[in-house]
Image (cartoon, rainbow, N blue to C red; front, side, top):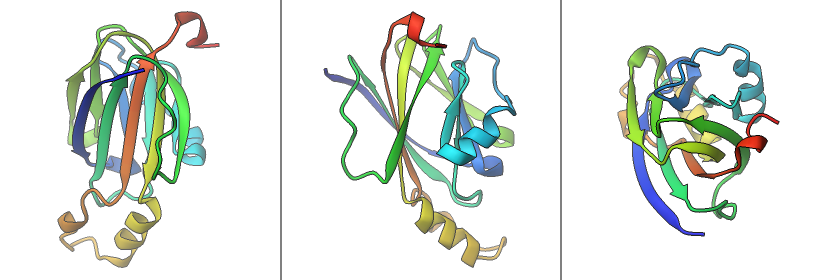
Length: 159
């Protein structure tokens, strides 16, 4: 297996979450994902991945990697969950809710997805200790997510 692409972004966790989906899959705002994402950090319906952040005041750092095959679980992260996502165009949308969206071009197809995370409790503690008027930008990136994607057979996508 080989890593093909890496990308990094700061994402605002509007309402405590952000979503990932293909530009051709208008599947965002799937409220059925909310309870599952809150319980497991992230959830997917096959067309959208919702990541439930630990707080909603500080931007989170999102690392994106594409691989030729399923990579090993990375070291140095607090936990992870494996999901699936369909990318018919390969244009991955990173949606920040009411804050807007941006996209990253990836390889199209059916993907296995791993969301690894760290810094959640630290970011939550910082956010809870601050007033809403405080400038928290110096803490941007305290909460971090690693999105790893790899090609996967279609028949396993929604099984």
